[in-house]
Image (cartoon, rainbow, N blue to C red; front, side):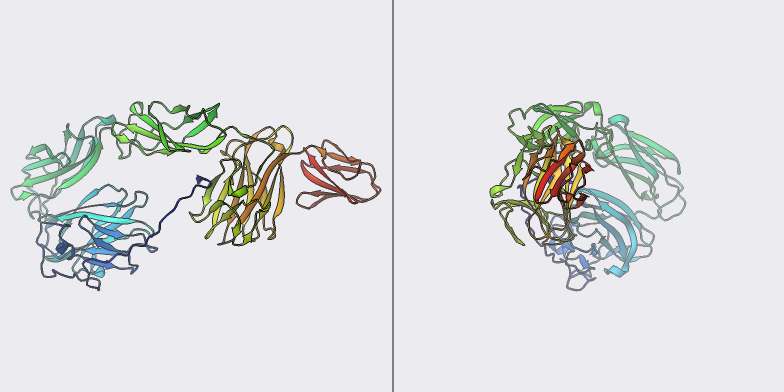
Length: 623
């Protein structure tokens, strides 16, 4: 659920990206050049070479025009289309030997961290989607805009030419997936050791700068034959480039562990490889975050008004960080940013989980207020968490009227709470409605309109009003001529933390209709009023105007004669009348009738009523 200030507009420029496939000749499955230049590994993609990029086959399998495109910095798959991605980036032919094992490494990232990108790596005998059926790396999901690296191995089932296809299958309306690099190693010797198993990196407890690398040495060679002897097992920190340990003549199938006392504070990637007289075997890699981590967002905070100050509170930070590492809550400080009315950092280095903002002492009237709280460790600043958002300041006195005259606000701020819909639907203040054509109810050049391009659910929310001790009522004019629209009126006496529905407007005629809502239950309280509109079809707006909060008195409020009506608590009494007496609700429903000549004794629920006898109409407010 989002909130935004009324009259604050954002302009979004729409653009359409037309992706042209580099490396295709107009028919899927064939490279444009270099078909005869078979690669013998090791091989590393050289993105800076346009000639090499052109050797890759690009297949737009779903035909939506969004697919892979080659650039000097990455291959990029556009995934913002209406269909789920089904796009292939296929390598040139690479010669592999039966039974040999190859190490494959690739790097990538996504464009938006909130839109994960997905692809798999498959191999086959032809650069065609139907032929790429051998899974090399199962589904890989890129969740960050920073580079992520993956390593896997592939054992060739037979000798021949293989093609490797990166198959992007991201959901519809994603953004972009990137392949920044990929490589395939020279084959490991068939009689060299297989990879270690049970490889695990454990970071030092509570942020300690150490890492323990545990693994079990292999019992087989790369070709599956029995391993008779291991010459060495070498552990390398690929992040620092340091050799952590070289273990001489370890026993096959034996659990081992070593400790790195000099990792970096951050992610550390380790490689373990065993060697024999036949050469180095198949490497295995694993990573862990070591040291103090960047904190995770703390979660939604709150603020309360105490005089002219706002007192903020928020949840304590988690001991687990962004990368799964350790965060010491006692060493975390907080940065506080006021996000509205003007974005600005108001405090840094805050300890604990509360802060008092004294910068609003000179505020006149009211403002729409919320903050963001950022946890900070020595590793970095975590994401900001928003606080409660609502009105701060001095409530407006009643009676009060907001008629949006001249398409401006008399009482500010009004803001919009978004429950459903996009940027094409909301409440706006306009001089008049053009579709349909409608002038403001009071002809003052201003009214509120909820519009939508499809469907939407938005609440137009008032500033704070202080109700007196006497009974108040809310009056407003509405035009809601579409049968599938709905307008509900809510009230809050806690600045919008919670809302209570007090009225509902269904379909009206095409003219303005006045509605009255009894506010007796809120006498003496400070309230916000919310007009929540639900529009289910294009161009069927809801229109509001001339909103007022006024005080009414109990008993008879207007007469043209003296009908001798008496209101005692909730009981209406009067002597026998010459004419029939009828009690109506403000919506026009008959509540009670008394025949001519009969004494009047009617008990009424709290509310506003119209009492008619003959040509005389009296308005009553019952508490």
